[in-house]
Image 1: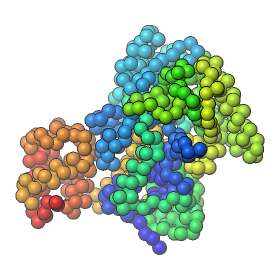
Image 2: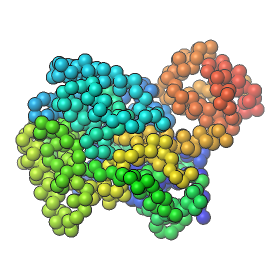
Image 3: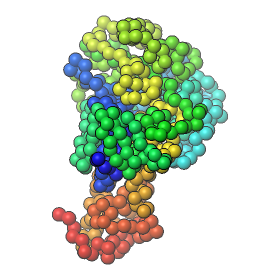
Image 4: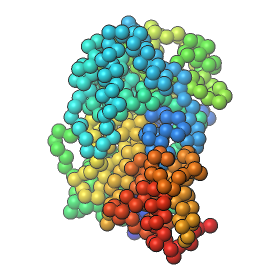
Length: 466
Length: 87
């Protein structure tokens, strides 16, 4: 029976990052991945010779070279990469567009402060006080306060609901696992990653970034098994001893780190581990349509990198009671990033909140029709705000919560996982740990740091102490 | 290893951990963390790289000895005296 120091479940960013750390420090590691491609929630797929990123509109947490204390800087150092290895192309300008007002922001935080001062002159003092609270908050503490709620804090600084909604729109869309409100520390992570740091895209997409990580991991001697789904995590007596794969291969392990999600992981334990009855499973998921265009989006008036829009006076971030909610969404124009030369084709990506339960009901033919109908409705709503681009579309594809569940195994296709995060990664099983989405650091940089932190905290530092 | 070799070994670890930092002008008497951007995660990595490369353990109570380059050399040289600086 093959035997490892550490088995990592899931070859997404968190799993690969944990693998690199452990392999670098001479641990015998095996990553097992259910899908035949790496990447998990931030992956890619090929259709008609085009490669599309999944999950990634842009990388948040952009920091320029030399910002060693930033999350991106930490990640690079911990994984022994140079800044230029990632070939990041920063955004130009993004927008939060509501019926009454619009706020633009760039990777220079002063720009947003100025926008708030101009659009909400009565709120700027409160906004700056909120910023101060955010700047001095230690959101990365693995043990800190997780109970304070974001809206309560926001309302204590800002009295105009519109500004609160406008700030929440990008933050919730890009990382809130819960409806309507979120933990304040999660809000701080997202606020910093979106507004104070900013957006970038890797020059050649997720495929390139993932290849960098896989190559590094393999060069360090790490083993990667694709198409290897875990059947059971064998944890007799509260301690994992081995992992059995669907093909009945059994792998011994001293430690297991799982990025499957908390509930997903504990359900695979034998004997099954019971959680508190109230343990919430993530519900928030999205439908996304990708449109390849025969021209640059900016020729048609799409000049922003990313637009977070809401067509109604109030912003509601919740699971819709129909297949999708077309009243708000995110529109990403990959072309409008600072690439060294223009992309080969124009592209727009439109994301809307979706109801996972309803997407799982229809049979195949109805499902395909539902995707078409929903895409048409999403576009109609978008075109009340934006120019019509339908005549320029040369290729399109749509994925739903059902697609996300199929390829990642995350229940409900909940891209931000359970609302209940386990910051220190511990589970009822002594040597089984959670990393990735359900540990609580989100986004590409966040997920990667999650894998790094869990590998450091639960394996490397323990080895140092003993 | 001579003192010079130990210094070179530390520099090599720093370059590996923080490739974007300039390590050519490090003053041996001054605190390392004031000269290059090292956080606590980086500091632990220095200790772990010492274990990986030279199989030596620096207990937590001795971390203070590693604050300056001169301190590193004084503390590590006796532990590294039988090691060769790898090519």
